Length: 440
Image (cartoon, rainbow, N blue to C red; front, side):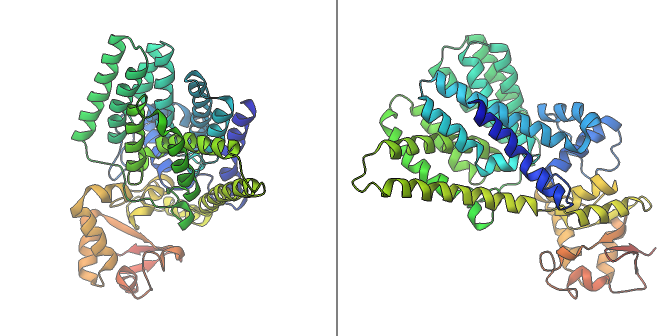
């Protein structure tokens, strides 16, 4: 088991080291920078750099608040790696306590370690890692009657967001069904889940959802095709226990199905797929084959398929935004006078973080505001100088940033929408190859 945990630790270094070697910031994506920005904002009490602050309470934000002053930009990576190693350890302990064999337990932890979810989470997506750690910690500590730590675990889980809070309800129900939990602890667990569920239903939904598909087709949040195939075989192998574990099966099925659309539940589905895949592996290893050569070939094909999904995820993460060039442009922007900046929403948090300037909207806010979303699309698509300037003046926009990689992804050509408007030299002064100043 120690060797498997060391594998988890080593895997956590791959993406940051690979990105550093090609001069990219160590953390891919915008989620780690949103967490860093919120933590820095809480530490400095300076809320001016956030156009639409997302400073709701969560246990993860508390951890970040404590670590950022010491470890800075490495804090999300350190937290997520620690959470994942602890999750692997607890998964092993839980399976052993529930009577699962050593071989199946070991295979399950290995499959969890090499899943695309673990790779993505170890790259700084600590809140996703904390979700699965909260689930496993609650199950483990409640099963050994350590109720105080169990309550802290359900608090950490439910505080992350709407869907984890709903998951907490189902988790309490399942664990209480199979373990003799103290009535007070069970009641308090339900209360915690209920309070946070109500709280998040009263708040705007900040979770970006959508069908994730398969990682083999380039969707970094997707599932591995071979892990799904293994899970289906594993489900057949354990179906005989459905009468005893029907609540576990029901919650597991709902979590996996929902995680195709809700990214926050991917960690739970990763554990479920790993466990079912372990049973499938065990079944293949124990099965008698009439043609002996088929057995190793089948296992080799499955292992190659799982490896392909992992390598695909790794390559996407290594080359994902933000790149070193993106960081350098926004750092230069930070040395200019303080004013609003217009960039496509997916770049908004990086402007907040490196340039310390406000933007109209980031990716998350675009999901929650139809009016702002329409205005941002109008600015990006309109070729009308007057309409564009009216929106810029409305939001105090003084700078526009267009990076080379935006051509072909955000805009098809330089004669389209905002890029056409920027060609007006009397209204827009090009400060660098990427930054324009809006004339007064």
